Length: 170
Image 1: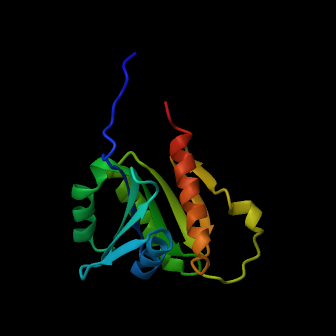
Image 2: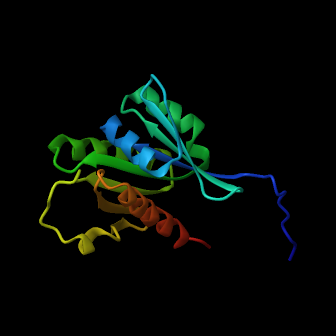
């Protein structure tokens, strides 16, 4: 057994794609998680969240247009930790768009993901305990509801994704 040495100033980076039919929801999710956010004029949002001096998470919110999806995969897909697909729970067409994105993702990456329906502070008749840990749709895909009006709720969604990754450590 050999020891792995890592220089103290080496930064470890985890990259997570945030996609979906609503760019404002992507922006909100990323801004709830990140100290630093950059919004470009081509429907792309970048955010960085520093976990420790040595570990940072980068979030890429990518517009729904096909050319932005291609840009994202060329840049991020090879080292992506996972993805978050956000949509408005009350918008009927939103889920259809997410299904199409999910089909595209399944052809491009083998990564873990979570589909997130935003309830935006609206009351729903589902007890929070039912969905707060997410529903497993497969070994690498979860579903959860998200209240975009609650900043801490975005962290809860991210914890589900991270737990999914940790549960698959070899």
